[in-house]
Length: 106
Length: 345
Image (cartoon, rainbow over all chains, first blue to last red):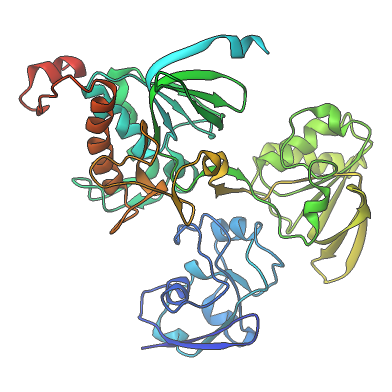
């Protein structure tokens, strides 16, 4: 199973085994990673599962689609590496993925 | 007192929230001859299905292997049409007052009053309200310099206006307020807009002519005192911080759901959800029921189908509450000619 590392804003590390096909948001919620709210439940309809993808991984996770970009407008301190974690699907390619949780969600 | 508040509409049931569960409640109550008024803060029926995921498929509605939020809403509207529900859109319920005869007067934020024998709360995650942008200290300027909607355009006359966002609200108000404002700056995170292309083109032409400014970036802080804003710190896409002078800010950051005034009605709440029993879906206040995502009870699942079930049981309990002496004969729509007559089939 691919491993995902979440870095909470206070620096706490959460290493999680994630199933292929699940989303980075779902694994954060399942493992109670603080700072990921996912108010809309993964419909890409809020901006409360915002994460920063570690720069070494941005190529593999790809860039947001138009709808996700639209939603990112509502997020706090959006950076070039910003993604909504409900829109990143786990695959073997992402084994070792590191994402950072922002200071606050919108 | 305004003219509106003098005329009181009367009905059997007021349903707060016109999402899928509120809509289906009209059907179940209608079969029992109860007429409904529905109040919703959105401008159309469907609740979260219409606002959050109109195009997204739902896979767990019985007998519909796949249906969109909008498709579900449209079909519910068709299903309840025989019962002629009255809709009050763009309204938030401000208060519910119990009368001596056990009925309720429901007041909206526009001061309309509806008298009803039963109130059903089907408010889902609460009412949709403008989202506060995540800018530290913004609270201190709200309602004096920072506004989340335009109630009166006068409020912005002669001001240096900073409008934040890239959707239709942001673009529409940029174009509409420009003639009366002293200056207008539109601030958006990126050079791509969700708003209608026509508005975006108009805005860009105005920027070209020098009639207004467009700034790309995100607000990181606000400066001013005593509720009067003087400028906003904007982090540009290059990472520079620039100071944008402004005396009024209109941020359009989408909608979020809040429980709102329901919290103040004396109902037993559990983590912002209304506690009910699983026989009648009644709250602690006789005559007020709660169904769908807004309620909680042991084993609760926030599913549309659970809300439909709750609507059916609630309807029978509501009928009993209204006519305690009438014997309710349980009937099926498939076989009862009486029910079929009500449905007009």
